[in-house]
Each structure stands twice: as structure tokens, then as C-alpha cells.
Amino acid sequence: MHDWQSLSHVRWECKYHVVIVPKYRKKKLYGKFREGVGQIIKDLCRQRGVKFIEGHLMPDHIHMCLSVPPKFSIAFVIGFLKGKSAVRIHRNLLANKRVTGLHFWSRGYCVSTVGLDEETIRKYIRDQQNLEKQQLELDFE
Image (cartoon, rainbow, N blue to C red; front, top):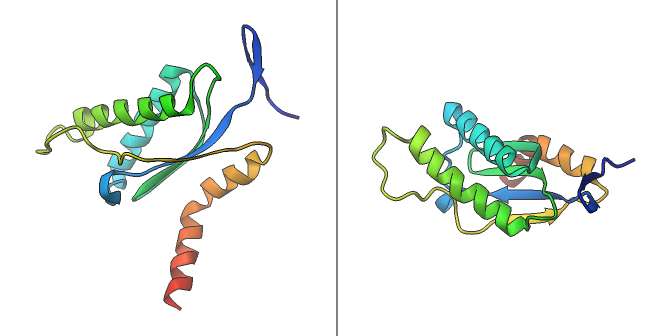
């Protein structure tokens, strides 16, 4: 049925569909830079005990399915991921480029609970690129 996880006094299943975008929605996530950002996000999730279930990087946003322990609020987790990843992106990936400030992500984010339709959400994340291409084709017709 469900893979419930447990802490000392709680059994839980808290999964979220999260979308974050770079500042000004610039198309920055591509090539080797894309792989680096993905690895940074996964490392930070592991560091906080957040399970990175599924993810897909588009050129101008990231879709993720995260399993967050109930001891952390989703706002805390996203703030942690965006803040620490921005520092690591600038330190590790943009070290040789002249960039002022450590801004990388926009202020907002989109989050929804996954609930019992986890497979539907995971399929949506996997097929995001194809869905976006289909939408563009319909817009130009």
C-alpha cells in the first residue's frame, strides 16, 4: 500500500510537488550547469533528511517531488534549499564568472501536497518537457 516512514513517535507520509524558478525566470538551467544544480539540490535534500523522490530540470524551472519529515515545515525546507543552493551555485558553478550578489532563485515558489495520487504527480514531473512542447505546438496553430 503506502511506504509510511517513522520517527520516534510518529508514522508519516508527507510528500510535496514543488516548483522553483530562477530569478526573472531566465533560462539558465541547461548543459553541465543543469547537472550541477541537480546534484546540489539532491545533496542538500540528503543533508536535511528530505527524500528527493523525483525531479526534472527545465531551462527555466525545476519540478520536484519531495518527502519532507513532519519535523520540518515545507516553507523551511524550500527556504533552506533555495538559500543554500544559491550559495553553492555561485561558489561551485559560477566561480569564474563575474556575478554580483548571491541571488539565483526568485522569491516565490509553487507547492502542493501529493496525497494518494503520487504516481500521477511523478508521471507529470517526468513528462513535463513533452507536455510543454505540446502546449507550444497548440499555441502556434
